Length: 111
Image (cartoon, rainbow, N blue to C red; front, side, top):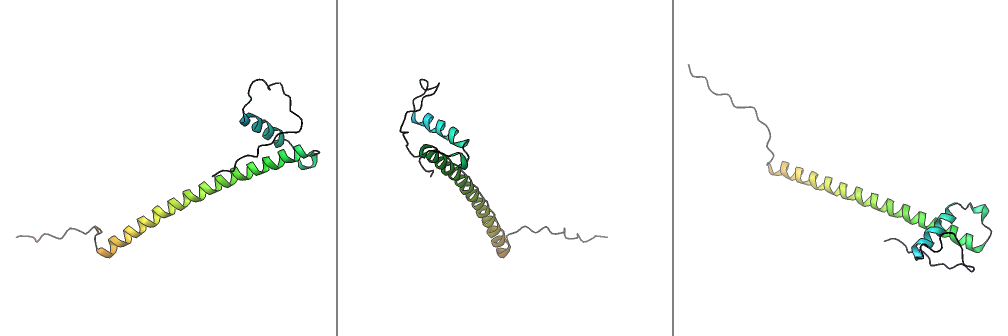
């Protein structure tokens, strides 16, 4: 499960040209993320910038963690399938159920 973003409200409202278009909380988080994505740690000069920077880092880590988790689960599923196939093959060999190709038996020649 992915972590929920922090609900932050700046001390002073942020005005933008697009402020009337979309008032959803998701859009404000996306706007903050876009702003924070361009911030270099040495450029941080206010608590709001620091918060946005840290939030962006946490979101990036969360995305990477989710990606790695899904990759690990996919590989474990593949390994499980291969182990099951190997077990079935070994069981077939033990039971002698495997159809080993045999050369045809020679037919006795009749003079």
